[in-house]
Amino acid sequence: MASTPALLELVSVSRRLGGHAVLRGVSFSLQRGDVLGLLGVNGAGKSTTLAIIAGVSSPDSGAVRLDGRDINDDRRAMRERIGWVPESVPLWPELTVAEALDACGRLRGLAKSARKAACGRELARLELEGVARRLCGQLSLGLKRRVGLAQALLHEPDLLVLDEPGNGLDPVQAAQLRALIGKLAPQRGIILSSHVLAEVEAMCNRVLILHHGRVRHDAPLDGPRGQLDARFRAIAAQPESAAA
Image (cartoon, rainbow, N blue to C red; front, side, top):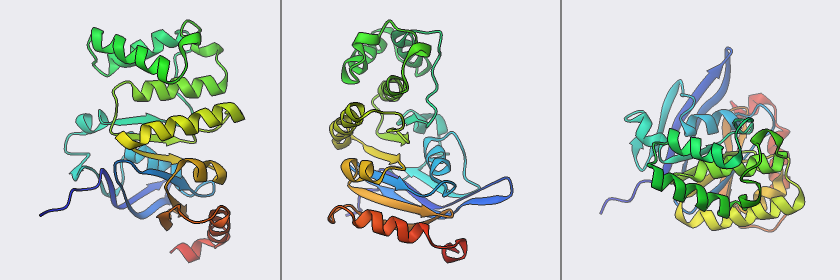
């Protein structure tokens, strides 16, 4: 019997920007229920990898597949299965939170009744009901990130892609994010980048470390706390020639 394909699979993905090789043959897979933490120093290729997975950028070579199907076969259909929150959350500052979610639902093509239900569900799930009538431009960074997550979840995506979701969150908000990721993970695959190793250890069951555009470590997070820090530091200290 043929095995079920991974929810997400990258095969030898490479990308050059400004004449520089940002990604060099990146390959890995993600199963439904996985929470994969993507680590690397600045410039390692994390944001480029996530943008390619989300379908907002394209690789120069290699393939990105969802359930075994290349995302370029039907780019629009594939993007409808992905929820994407970039590091800088795109919001309309002149709209209220409720209006912004409704506008995102319209862009997703949700019918009026489905849109109303989805907006209500995410306002409750992200604990945003108390700020539903506030303008997005007046929100704190932490609240903006929660609105970004609400937007990404409106269509109940199979794959959630988060670029630095913990940036700007206070300890209470960070704990709320960890709890939310835990609730969301069983129904979908989640990949997130972070500079905070403790955050990755708390939320993820796997970790992947990029260094100079290459995968240098990909393994379950099942060891004692502190091992990840030592592994990351050892890889980050290596010169670019070691990643060639």
